Image 1 (cartoon, rainbow, N blue to C red):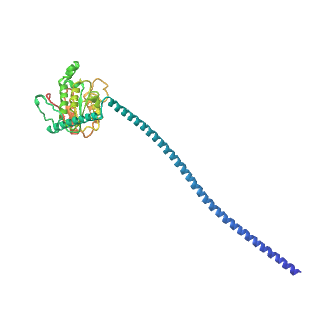
Image 2: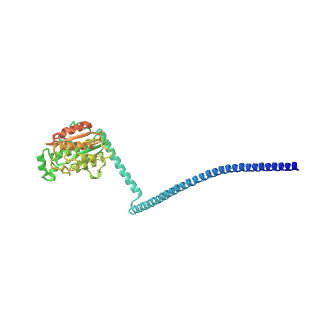
Image 3: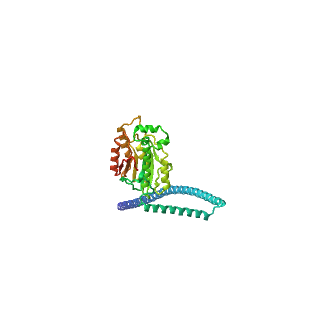
Length: 363
């Protein structure tokens, strides 16, 4: 009995051991399976998060693209509105032109008649051009008009009359009436007709006529008059170049100059500033004056301007000149301004131009 009891006890212990080992194995297997599932779950979550992030980026890009498309659509709408507006204006213009054509037809005009008139004008212009070319060939290509001085005398001046765009600056201040101050004062108290016939002023006008007669036929020119202010001689040509080949306009320039009565002070700075309006810039400049300026861009404070002040105003004015352009000065005599010749001579030398102080019978 005792042996059997021990055997049973031993069996029970063995069974319990076996059960304990089996349970432990099950627990171990469960832990292994649970860990594996956790790893798989983490990998799956990472993949899902990556896909979510990609989808969010695509959504963001889609929204940005939608905004851009809306902007493009708005621009297209604006372009369409503008195009419709232009189309409407063009249609209106076409209607106006058609109405004008019908009106001309009602008045007796025909297309053939208008074409013939245009052809006639073209032929007339071609003849004028041919005449100018022939005149240029006869005169060696240097003169667009003639100027004969007293006694048919010719002078060797040394002036460089070439260039493609030539500016002529004419002083029309009161000092251009006479060489001496007392005579200037006397003439200023006389009538306009007497002042226009003053000897010194007449010589200045003849100088402009002589210059324009020597300019190359294929060149452009402009005449700027200046006293305290400066402007183109012909008001409608402000800032524009004139053709030397246009003889009728040259004659108009001459006649307009003879309507001027010299008056006021002298501002070289305003003259050079007015010249800056010309485009392209001049490549040759002629300055006709009789002395240093008496003011700058604005009137002087006092009633008297000293010689040093005039020098200062002059040196301030020449800063407005273009560089590399010859400045040819035709200096009329004037008492009480001894530094004028020296200053203008230096300007002519630096700019490779010429200083001419003509005699009373020139040109």
